[in-house]
Length: 254
Image (tube, rainbow, N blue to C red):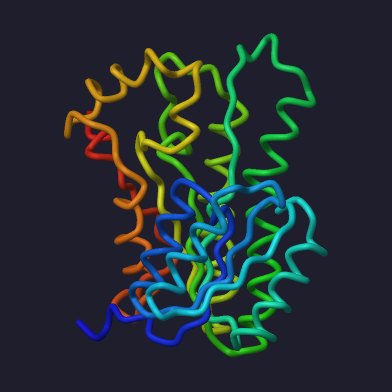
């Protein structure tokens, strides 16, 4: 079981103030890592994340910014390395969602989702990867979605689906570019999960359909994405890179 330990590793987590990002930040701290937490300055949950991590006896550093701004990410990574130590792990979970019929979607609505969900992951990986290359090793997990592989019935979200498909292929591409530099890059693609995104008013009635259409007959909780993340970050996954790990309760089997 020692192979699953993240003891004294230094991790950087985007979207750490809520949902899947928060759950993973807590789990990797429980596995032994010290964690730099990154989210929007308006995040209300990031202090809670930090408090729970320090209660475990781990170090937590709160940083703020937007994943669409490389300078903010680079500053946060530099702050993390200065305060915590050389960066070795990263999880990129920041993302947004909304819906509109394709024929009615404005360019600005399309662009914002692409900017945050896809460009934001690239910029996060770039800032993290530069540090890890200097340090000679690292592991990155990007959070995509099963929507990057399937098209969700009843949801008009071409921008979201396209952004998540991009995250999958971006991650595979980075995995191959950085494999000789000692950095592994993998993806977790969650199924329907009880995050703030899926508590939006526009999907309230559809949650029952989500549960019905998932073979396991329920939606996931955010912490059910945390165990897979610890595995992919740990030495237990030392021969795993470029993988899109579906954590969807069997949804794609149907």
